Length: 423
Length: 121
Image (cartoon, rainbow over all chains, first blue to last red; front, side, top):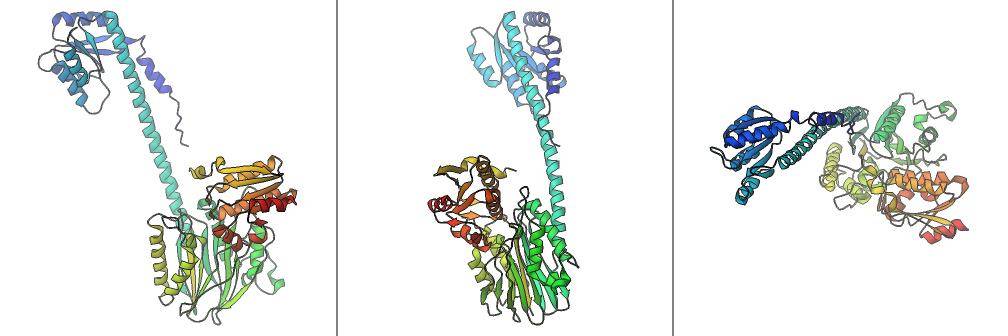
């Protein structure tokens, strides 16, 4: 698991190395051209327990900084070659590496040098000749800043590492979800002609996986069952139930534990009994309030007779070849919400060239950027307009229309449409 | 990950009118993000001993399947121990109740007052 709250123990270990009571660890560079001052600084700083390197000008100091990991510098203002201010500017212009803390030595009255030096990037200043106690406390202040900087840098590194772990975990989840999405999509039937009956569909899950699913299942010669399901909620929990239902309904035997023989009609051919059985099996509980809406029906290829049942799912549309659109059914209890489910069988005929369009609520509830629903009326008008187009083309147009309606953002809900067409 | 942002408990008002507890979500879109908060508010009220409850949907413009599930779980949670009514369902919310036939299961009233009066009687 990813733990951003990792202990800061190695920070503390780092602190111990540069603890104030162990200043021997700290290396101070002194840039000073006056031999008297050079000697003074060497003696005083070593007396304070620092490791000291003295150079005579800014150029030599810069060269030394390139070679050695020194972060604390005391520099004179007036020096040959590279003076104190220029030294500061060049140190600040360096890219990468650790921070260099610079204390500028100036004459007691030289406020211009002080201002120029501080503007050039010095962190602090000392008057010449420096008072030993003042020198000590200013160096300690510098060390505090450097310690802080080191801690920040360490924390930064940890954050970068944590971020990388998160990125890897995200990639893993993303890959898993993509695999799941592919598996879910593979359960959908390839569009085809079943002899007297053709079907095609549109399926866009709102995230990788979703609760919508459908199938068209030729059962016996000339009789085909079909369904569209929308499991409540989104994402993985909805997809899990959706896949279970798809598997259960697509199984050849459709063994739902019902008493098929007694009723004289196979369970797959008896939408209301099938619905009651699903409702019995998939009741919601206190812990799991996932339920689903469904349209389940059976169509006879030769006569075009359809018997279907609607369980809380949007009403299917019956579209004549001339573009007359009829809404089939007015509703029904969703499956699993309540123990008793009243069921109505709806019977109608699919004339040659007519279409039956099943859709999930993700289609009619698809909102534009202003929040306006696509709505049933628009879907009906669209079905009417495209009645004479080839099925594949009509669905392609619908996909485009919905995408345009969304205005570029992904869908809030799974969008699925299943269309059966009698030849 | 921050799915419940839109459903902070303070977006759900509760008050008592003559022994009837009124729960009013001040949420336009009652969806998967908001549904758990509504369910939790009801659970709290029931645990606090209230048995006559009105869910006031007067401020709700849209409800999705998750929210519908939450409403039904409120109904089930009260069960035979008390009484539950819904007020203010309109537009898309009313359509959803009709499509799912919950308009025949739930006690629906136009106003909070009517809903409260009905379960007080």
